[in-house]
Image (cartoon, rainbow, N blue to C red; front, side, top):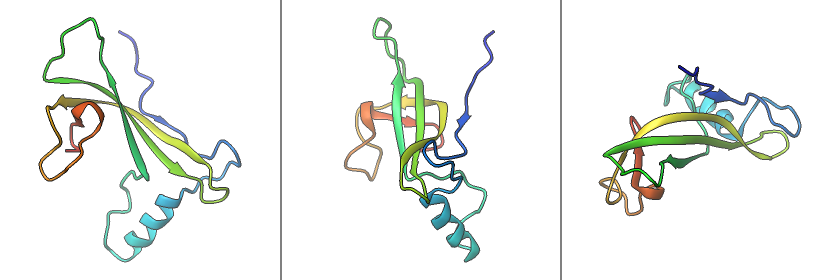
Length: 112
């Protein structure tokens, strides 16, 4: 069995080496006010890439590469801060309450 390399965590900006992101700074301020849990993994964007073999039939769930993207608090560079592999449900439309769903109709477990 192959050992997974995921999750991958990128702890500093590849451009300047800063370890702080804009979302983390804002989140920490909200945590100090007691509005959010400080230990939550946060990012400004979450991109999803379905891991589907086009030669195989699609089931009700599939693997998804979930990318967490943020901006460096020092130089402003946009970069990937974390990459996870998750399992998501294949949907025919957006989740309830959303007009536009994620690309491909995928909703990662625990994110929908």
